[in-house]
Image (cartoon, rainbow, N blue to C red; front, side, top):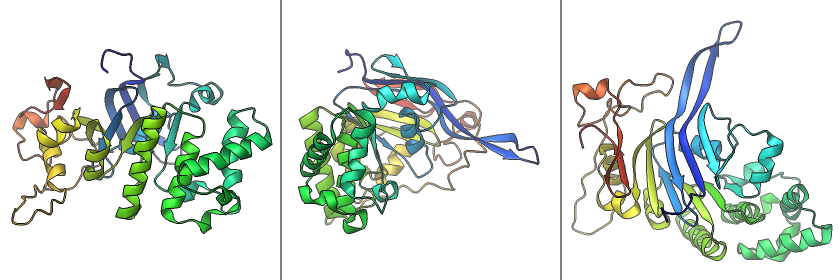
Length: 323
């Protein structure tokens, strides 16, 4: 896998949101949502991105797809630089890069039939006739576990799981290569989560899809993902295969996250690692290692020196002075 050209390569990506104040609305500070993220995503794999709320994982996913303008860095898709492209030029890549949102209902017009909403994808990106568009939409509905006659229903007539299936249908409509799943199952009941995960895995096998799977649910990520990136305050703290991260977590933040996964094994106690303090503000970024304010291993130099991103074993990377 690593010998092939990556489907997606991101280098030193930064995304800052300016804080403006005063009558003239001058920028007085920046919220550093994503800070120096570099990684590769290979065709056919599922890369999990995990971390606490506010760690920048969703902003990173949106930035990769051009839904957010990046502050600095480069984004290559199939070897082509796509950062900074105009909306017209980026449209050429949109067919090959799609997103599944946490709440598909928010992006659906409550007064528009589901069939018409899905048909819009083909109106924008294809030259299919109306009859062919309608036929393809009905095929998509069946493909994601719905029925053809759901074409004429409205969003409020569907359950949360069914609406997410509609979101998945919209994402796969144009046969993309890369799909960013942004908390795609977090709002669903556990039983429905399992159904949607099975659907995503089945579609991946059928169409050789590549997923970036953004989630705070580490149990789901373990089941879904080939590799896992752990983010903290917009930065990368650990990256490795699923086995490396779950069986041999090295970064103290990763260990704390994994300790929170419920393991209902009778007769076995599980020690929860509790992090002291709150997540620092991204608008008042810590010096040195961004995790030093909460890290149980922190030393004096952690407060001033940014840790080097280094490979500790093949494919397993970490940013920490003390490990």
